[in-house]
Length: 242
Image 1 (cartoon, rainbow, N blue to C red):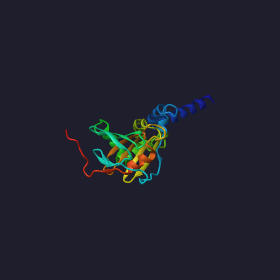
Image 2: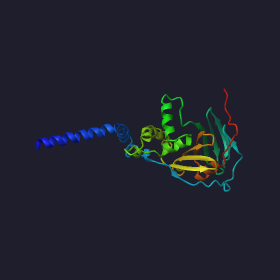
Image 3: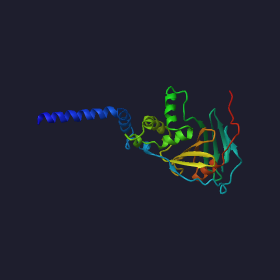
Image 4: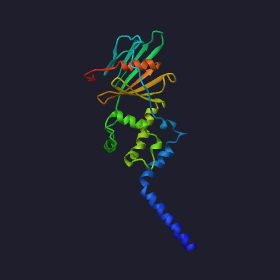
């Protein structure tokens, strides 16, 4: 009887060892991910974009003359007070008809950092998942949660989840309430509700696979939607030459 028990224990041990060996890759990703990204410590890692429909009509807002940055022109219902121009960004300080200070900033952004030493390996993983544009990468990143780190997750996707979650924290720093929507030809992600914080950030993606971060200060949702719907990109984007 004792011999049978020992034999059974040995068999169970061998089975467990085999399972650990077989799932060693999955465990090396799943366990650290679950430990590092918990719902208590990092609830923002579990936030995913909610889709919203944007009414691009602007007839209810009295637009001022068009303004422009390096890459596009746009309209706002506010009076321009100051403009600060940087190498990769422009900032506009404005005033509403009611005397309220408003603001808007535009900065060009790169989702992929091609000079990174791990870029080539990372790019191969993205290609396997058919993430071929900046928008698709951002969408995948923002929809990734620690719950995706599971045994049934395909290996190619599982391998990229930790990087995506770390990447995601850079964007959820703008706000953990995320909206996904389209305005005309632009695909957008908005972080935060205008009613809650003073700052609202919108990632916009154009047809040329470029990414911009547009920030708004003290703007209503109607104002944000209307300004975004008025954006017209220049045929030949201005490039500053030093």
